[in-house]
Image (cartoon, rainbow, N blue to C red):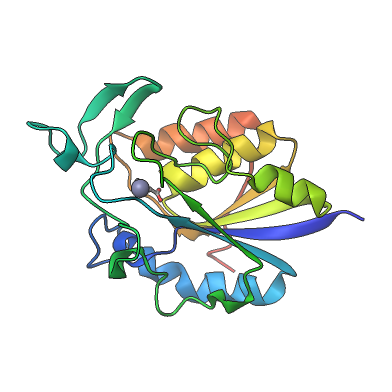
Amino acid sequence: MAEEALIVIDLQNDFCPGGALAVAGGDEIVPLVNDLIRRTEHVVLTQDWHPAGHSSFASSHPGKQPFETIEMPYGPQTLWPDHCIQGSLGSDFHSGLAWTKAELVIRKGFRTAIDSYSAFFENDHKTPTGLAGYLKERGIDTITLVGLATDFCVAYSALDAVKQGFKATVRLDACRGIDLNRSLDTMLKRMQDAGVTLEDHSSE
Ligand code: VGL
Ligand code: ZN
């Protein structure tokens, strides 16, 4: 039997207003995400989870500023303010998130030398998180993605999901984006071209 899962991406304090890498309106999606959690049988959360001194932090690269890009052995990497440090308040889920129903929490970005936007693969696009195997073993072939940020962790997760053979829908009304150098348009187009279903129910 084909099963469905809701994947809630990185709905953590550091991505909400007041956090270290705040996404505009990041906290606004919490009530809608909670509705979707209530209505979905299987719920998986991801949690951005970096050690102090992580290589995606601008502070780890002398002379570099947040939002600059550097070349890493696995390709270009955007540099970020320090965020989602393992065990910090910023790494906690938003306090309003109804997270208790989650059957799995996937932590990502815990290797110092490599960042991980996608819930499925780290930024080398080779190192798996184990999520594809977990979902497949449980007979889940259809996923809905929500959370933060639309144009980074949500988008890369959705792209990898279709590559791994899942039917993937992104609920744009339950996401908010960073939009760095027009990344929102770029990633919406990439998702559309890859066969990700983009839905926006905000006028309903
Ligand atoms: C994210 C930048 C760095 C995200 C995580 O959740 O979209 N973005 N780490
Ligand atoms: Zn991160």
